Image 1 (cartoon, rainbow, N blue to C red):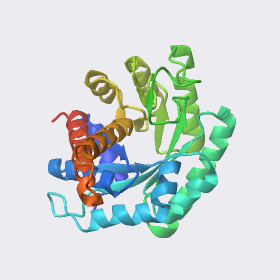
Image 2: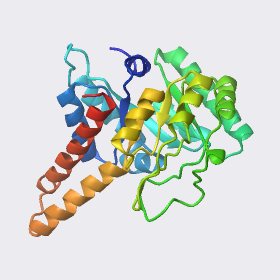
Image 3: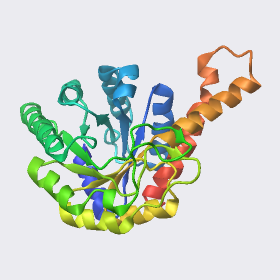
Image 4: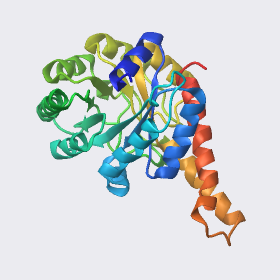
Length: 297
């Protein structure tokens, strides 16, 4: 079976992107997996620190591993579903995810001074390389530079601290520095993206900024906070150098809207598997649409 690194490299070569979708429970995982398997596409499942606390770190690894090993892709190989420890804010939490068996981890030091961000990121990379050498795993480490907010929710306006002026976006020079000084495998910049969905309308992505950062760093770029961005902007961002696209808020909204609707229409139903069926299907619809967009289908 090919590694996550190989799938990301292939996506970059083809001018497409691997979809990254967060989960908080097994219902969300089923919805995401059903969409991916329908299209026979690789996917990354993400769990933030909060989501890991709810699902369980080892439990998330076991769930994704079970989906991988009990399903096959079109070529008969174990299904290419991978697990990422999304937005991890300390070395100890990075280590915890690596030790549990995560395929990739992002250390998010975006709110730290760049020197501290680099120092902790380098520590994460060194530990991942050590474990990879000892176990034969290929663990990917991603870093983030540039603040885009921290919550996957629906906002009335821009989250506090998020600035969209080009002067506040990740500079190609800083991006090059963090990549060269840490040896990270992937990089997540601030390029006009925002975590969550803005009710008044999502700001446009700075495509020229993406191009400049890609040229400066040479590693795969990751677009966080892509919920709510226009299809056209996402297509342009992938063409400019984005290789992985993160979606979370749109999944949460679809899940909860379907749940509220079912409960309103079926107030006497008490069987969870019946109550949650519509939410699984709603997540699947969103994920299939996104995967088709990311892969030009």
